[in-house]
Length: 163
Image 1 (tube, helix red, strand yellow):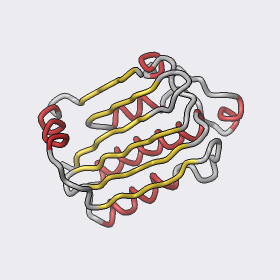
Image 2 (cartoon, helix red, strand yellow):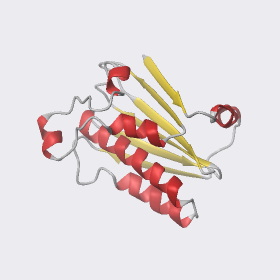
Image 3 (tube, helix red, strand yellow):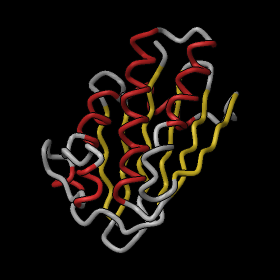
Image 4 (cartoon, helix red, strand yellow):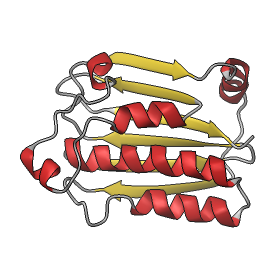
């Protein structure tokens, strides 16, 4: 299983602190993401954004969360045989996990290159598959972790701090 990590500059200590504490999330939301269901893909991201807006999260942070979660949700619908989105909301951050049921990412570093895509014709017909999903997630998150290999399930998870 290959792992990819990206931690935004200056976020190393916050990330260490986050993983060292054993605090349950204040709110946990789960959404199923069916394969190639572009009519519903994005609804989980929208619900998370709306909840955080009601909780008073800053609009710039909301934008980053919305972009990263939408891109990841579309990627699960477009490139896998389905999966789920789990959002763990804490008082100071959000940790969102996307777990799919395969077929995995053969080369994570290549998949991180803007413009690289393995999208099929159906995905492209719906206007997706430009190869910007993972780079946009990375750009908008404070920490990104991807664990995958060809023929296996994929985990994409990211953290965004509220301040």
